[in-house]
Length: 328
Image (tube, rainbow, N blue to C red; front, side):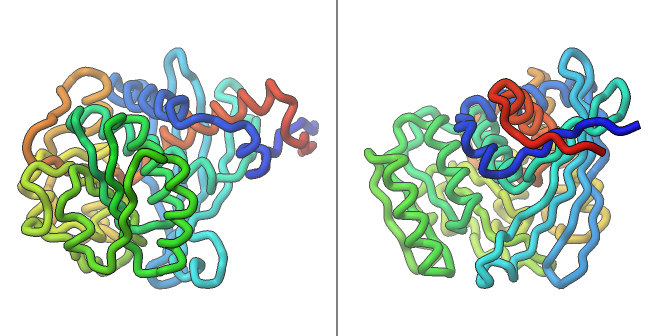
């Protein structure tokens, strides 16, 4: 017996013009479900076909009133960037929870980028200072851009954007694309890390996830009460920063599991007993956000983000008649 599956391309997803606040709302709903134990989500497993490269499988079922499930197969290949190929790529599959039949297949690159920025935005909304005016973006690729869009939604007083990237081309592209997004902000590109982060209220690192991280941002470089958001596992912020901060992860189980496996997560970062909370606990109201002192978050990316964002995409695409039905 054959049945139809909806194929949704990246161009079709982008044509939906889904706003960052809508994705943040979906991501936070997923966090809340995690906090209330309505989610089945094993830690993402992966293979590493080349040095510093990964291919991850990320299944999830957000149960309860939401009842969405799916699995993402996503790869991260830093060597792709100089080749003009995407660093992050993959496929997202949504399944029907009642029957297990595939419902839709869609590009995972866009979903990964936007749900990751949205997760940073949700974290910042609970832990950022209301009067935040400056942000430093370390890594000016896709994640740097989308994370800045999320910060714009959270911090209406944002007036200073510092940016650093090892590639001048990446930096120039970032400046040309992001200046129109924040016309009231002053943008500054720097050639060194310490100047980039020195006066920033929020520091977001979006560098490649690597096997042997250099951790080049040290505590003496940053403000005593900075909000430090790591989108690159443990690649950029020093151990001292995360050990002394009020430390948050997106999901406790995945963080601890990954730390024990050793792949892309070396020793030195907070252990289980030093985690203040994970974002599921915070969004479900079990732990309050903290807006004072040094705060650090490692947001590794979790499958609930993908399922919630993909379900939003699927619903809007179906309403607009987008996508191609493929018979299996």
